[in-house]
Amino acid sequence: MKIIGPCTELLTMAGLSTHGAIEDAQLELLSNAGVVVDKEMITDVGPYDTVRKKWKDAELEEIEDHLVLIPGLIDAHTHSCYAGSRANDFARRIAGMTYQEIAQAGGGIWQTVQATRKASVNELNQLTEDRIRQKLASGITTLEIKSGYGLSLESEIKILECIKAVAATSTIDIVSTCLAAHLLPGDFKGNKNQYLSFIRNELLPVIKEKRLSNRVDIFIEREAFHPVEAGKFLRQAKSMDFDLVVHADQFSVGGSEVAAACKALSADHLEVSTRREIQCLIKANVICTALPGASIGLGCSFAPARMILDEGGCLVIASDHNPGSAPHGDLLTLAAIIATYEKLRTAEVFAAMTFRAALALNMTDRGRIIPGFKADFIGFKTKDFRDILYNQGNLRPYYVWKNGVKVLPDGNLK
Image 1: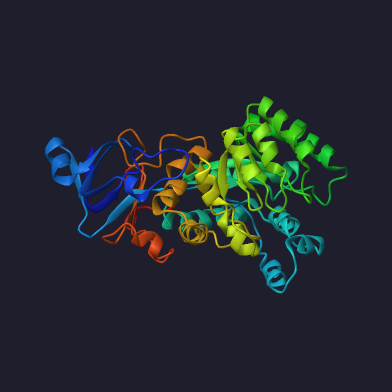
Image 2 (image 1 turned 30 degrees about the vertical axis):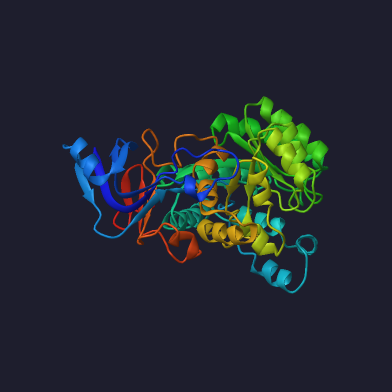
């Protein structure tokens, strides 16, 4: 058992609702505070002098700097396991080509699929490990990674096995998601329904047997999969005990209705969602995940985050880190940017990257600095917690604790 502190300010995120708008005045902000950690979990939080007197035999991990402590960030939607670059896509896009035109010209997702298929297992593992280290250095302590750049039995398994192998040695907790239903592969001999049947009948049973993932995602869009065929696929995946998530309403509506009908855990993207789609998701208790990285990368609108909160929804902000539409990948920067466009309060942004993001991964044991939660938190060298978003990503975490162990700046960073 040990006491970490004193912290100039400690943002607990205690007592905040999982749904709806949050006023900044609702934030519990402790001054000159300490955290008591035992066996990877938080045991107590409070004024530093008080916890020291209460836990006299605890080891002290003293902080000499001015420090603001907040929960570790949770990035609930990424595609961080891939090979190759899509710099050519970006050049075409800023020259005026659309996402769909680039795909038709041989770029897009299929280009990354080909590069990822060619990559050796060792190469793919190393690339993924490097990206995870960058995530941890940016304050991410729990990370979701999707497959979807394999689109064949062999290659999808290769990606998911890579994610599993990297997760086994990583400091970060990693959640894998099967996104084999990302696109109809260019080399698949059959139509979209036949490809979804292949995933359901041949791929998902192997994933279940090897315990590679318990989550299934699908991209519902004109160039990907139609809402009707997607709904059938998701219902079948749910009958196999997979949690469901959906790429919905990125370029056209329809995906959110499928997510609501199938009781998906979350609907992600939502850039073109209207009030009707948002209300449909909220009524079905589907989490709404905004992906500002894709909006910036594609030069399109942001998900209606303010509307989601005002309608009573659970808003999550994730990076969508991927080689095509969202190569930036830095959650804190992207969250600060969408906050300025969607007029999100500081409390709402932090909630969307911590305990609400945990719910998008079906987790309820992290994202707050309160007793009984995992001891995942990050520290910034500042006196004022508002500096974190104000600096729009330029103020980086100086300290990172994972399971109560300091992994930055002095720990073993993996």
